[in-house]
Image (cartoon, rainbow, N blue to C red; front, side):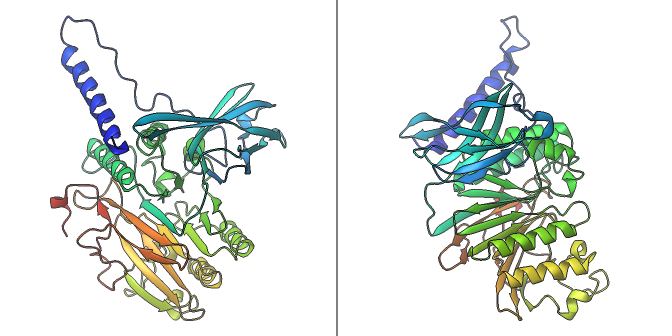
Length: 431
């Protein structure tokens, strides 16, 4: 029996039990115990640098640092382990490994993974004066092939939906099931996780990820609906981070806040990282607000005249209104992309697809800007995700699964792009 079949059988059983509970509640039979709420076991994240949206990415035998939030700082950790559950050969198997812990200070601890650990996504459990559970926070990779498969989602907006919250839940569920079926190596999520920064929304988001994206590493940055970020940090940790996948891939996440651009400290930090890891061949940056509001190819460079013009006043400007509010930051960021040959920039926010192939006429480098529509909060005709296959040897992009209306990086109207795989009924998606 395939893993996906087991998942759907389990889901069907849950629905069946829920139905039985509803149909018997009005009789004189003994009450059926209620199923727990999906978010009942979600707790605040005790760490700031790793978590379900920022897993440590390591090989067997590697060491990484865990940073505790000050309010959770243990005086000492005595032991710890990682565990995960997999479906293999028609059996459910639990993998559990003891980790080695070395204290740096009260909030910083080095964690070493055993050399015989099997690849996969793990929960980390640490013991000291309290038990600390950091779910889906350690991604162990055993090798890096020539291909990396990514699912890109954005704007899940937990707590709302179109036309109502129930429909939003259906779309989030169907989108996550579609992501599981596509079986990517990782999921990139470019923010607006919650709709109004409510605690209940982040608890539901965490529960959905654990239930429906259990095996998939998720790399998450916040959006403007997650701002201010107090509750985002409580449940996901930091909004700015970077990860290395071996010696082939650098991923940097930035926070464009409610203003639409990263602040200067983030841009300088990005430059420092790009310079430090300039020999890493594939460089990916993710954030919420797209640099461009455009579709197709652009052959320009950071100091082109159009990048000095306010897009609110120039109708043919390719620049988004958000980055158009700080054109100096825009030019600085584009120069970074050119100077360090940034491969891909992922974004969301606009609840529509737009793909831009940006070719620098100064450095002859190409950066692909991929903006993906909302997974769950658009109109009834336009919700989805993107599946991108990256060749790590020659850096090329492929879209092996695509809708009939897929335009890729063609020069067409920026308001008529339907690149995403839909997670709503196909008869409602046709443009």
